[in-house]
Image (cartoon, rainbow, N blue to C red):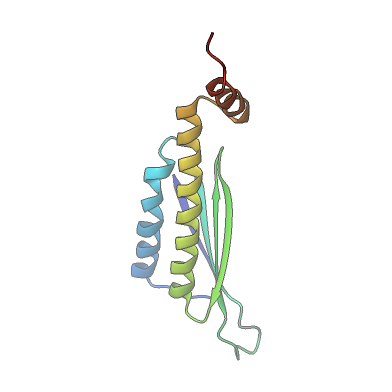
Length: 125
C-alpha cells in the first residue's frame, strides 16, 4: 500500500503528516488482499489569491483493482476536512469489503442468487 500526501498552498507539520499517514494506514486491514493499492491525499487551500476566505479542501483517492474511490471534503480547518473525508473513505471501503466477502461466501453473483431462490421453492416428489 502506497500513501502519497500532496499539499498545495498548505503548510503542514511533520506530526500532522505522520498522523495522516497513520490514520490512512488503518485501511490496510480491508485492503490486504489487494496487490497494488495507491492512496493519494491532496490538501489544498481554496481561499483564492486574496486569501480572504478560509476554505480548505481534502481529496482522497483510493485506487486498486477492485476499488476506485474519490472523496472531496471542504471545511475551514484542514484537519477537520481530513477527518470527515477519512470517515467517508473508511465507510466506502468497508462496504465494498463486505460485498466482496458476501460474494465469495455465496459463490457468485446474481445468477446464483436467482437460481438459489428458485431451488428453495421446488416441489418434492
